[in-house]
Length: 303
Ligand code: ARG
Image (tube, rainbow, N blue to C red):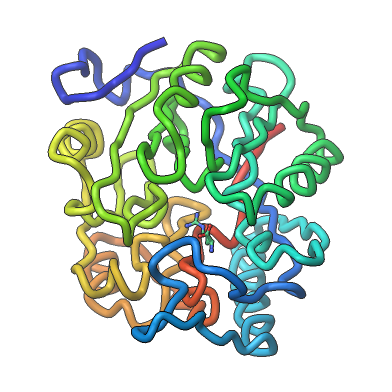
């Protein structure tokens, strides 16, 4: 295993890391119970400190548009049932970290998250049992006290045996160290430095093997240098789009198309001039909960 904390820890090139197949499946959760019923991140309250009101009909429509956009790219979408009393379960990037069979070298494994906020703890068994049906072997951290929020903070580099790991707000360094050791992984630790960017996926989207979309100020200087050292093409989202439109919570299912929150105009232009095809989607109802395109799904497989 190899733990990267600063650019000085890198003694290899991205191309030297073993190849792994790209994730090829998407899981989404029926948004029937989506709502904002508590505040566990700064985006869920208005200026007066009240919970934001969700239009559930509009939320369902937006969720369907995302689902159809993913399917239009030829990607299979499984849909897990909703879970009554759990308004955030729709953000199914968070409850598990799936490790493909190529990563484990055997059966695919789904590591159960340990959510930072107790309001979300009951979502974990629901998603884990769905992943078990899909063929993942459920597994837990040995150190069960350590916090971990799945692919909200753990992003596998597309096509390479490398895990980018957000640290400090929802997931703890110790959890990543345990996973690195158990699966003999290279893990780049990225401390997050701004409470608005509380998951790694709010500040970094790895779009393809050599390109990412990011908001550098969300990271510590060491984390920024790690990303700069390993990802040659970095597209920066401007602050207003990153902070208020969650532009970096974008998703490229195929390395060519980027699904992006509507209205992220500068980000769209920058992605387009870098050669990406951009599909803008409206996730405004989910932004009220501090989530957008990337965290409304789990990108996983092959298993
Ligand atoms: N309200 C949810 C929370 O704060 C939103 C989660 C969004 N997920 C994400 N990966 N950014 O936990």
